[in-house]
Image (cartoon, rainbow, N blue to C red; front, side):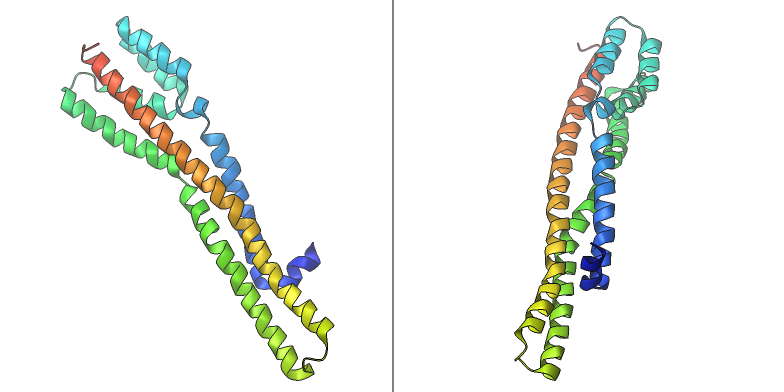
Length: 201
């Protein structure tokens, strides 16, 4: 493994760093974007039941204890329940934007890794091919084994770049789609709670 990295040169070590960073982000986002962490259905139902029964303080306590994106949004809604409907919706839009930014953190970095890894691999291959042609200029084209070995080493970085990029791109798209679904659900829940707080349901 170490020999494989050394053969690829500096570019290979950069790709190794990208792969470690990508794996770290994938595990962190997979843990942080669970439904139980973003929109816990039990807590949402408990808050709704508390509001329907007129227990605003109990509902706020449930939101405070949940430590979730939905809980923080509902806590703000309950804290500002005395304001007019347009103002309440504006407040919820603001806190919603903050929570969405929190959900999307590191996902952009994952997309960047997916985009640059193939380019880094190609750069390593180009550098390796330059070395091969330098060998040709000195040794000539008669030694096929040397040329084949040099080309093989040069192509290692392209393979490594694609190996890093493909899983990173898949994870990037999956997390992006998951965040989009959560945003839609959060908006639906927030709208329903505005209607509940304003006595329209």
